[in-house]
Image (cartoon, rainbow, N blue to C red; front, side):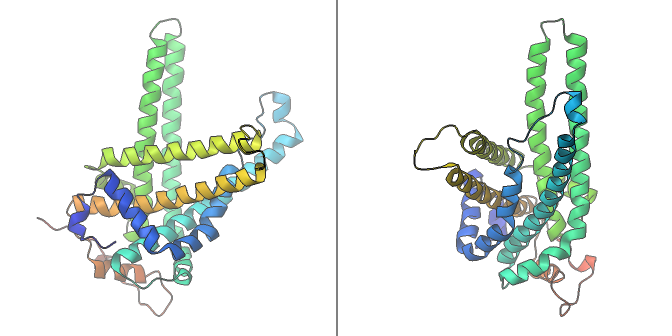
Length: 313
């Protein structure tokens, strides 16, 4: 990231894409190792539930197979959470080191990753609670509309409008929560404070961020749908010599690249938002803050010494 931080605020949609691609291309060896060790397993776990059995009848819910299914879901969510935490911390730390010009090796990145575990876990817990609360609220709204207006002509348009609002709200929440993870790694805030900080940062760059995240989620959904059709159901066999295993490998690789690209983008968006709000990111102080995560030969700094201070233009 060779741009001056004052210039970061002027990056638009394609500028953020270009800067993210430049970061990955310039340090492709480290990102390739991170992708193979953390993001590829995450992609595998993400696609693992596709095509799993759905249960509708009470007899199915009480069956032994349903018990195994629940256990599978618990193990799945546990591993998905762990790999998400590790991938997020690794990529965010790597991009921050590139921004500050620190020496960077894959071994150093993997040493740092467990250090931010507790703070990221607190942030992820707040993310989980916020997501569940939004889903419950949206479900209550949908059920209320259907129950009270089921015999009127307004029910269909209202449900359509509510669905659009839900999608927009979900994307906005995803942006806030993604930036909260970056804030957790790069600043002293974590949990609810990190979410409040990310909400403040995104102001002014919300439209660009929503477009980026919408395109990312559209890409994730497309890969998931392709995996369902080509691998699970075996449809759309466009090339006779290519079997399901080849399609599965292709889906895993594409999804891994999307995950890596998304994590780098959310870190770049963080720096863009900091620049937009004229919050000075002192590279020396940020570098010292990153040293806190390193082994014992580095002396941790106090919170007041590593704050990213605001300057006025």
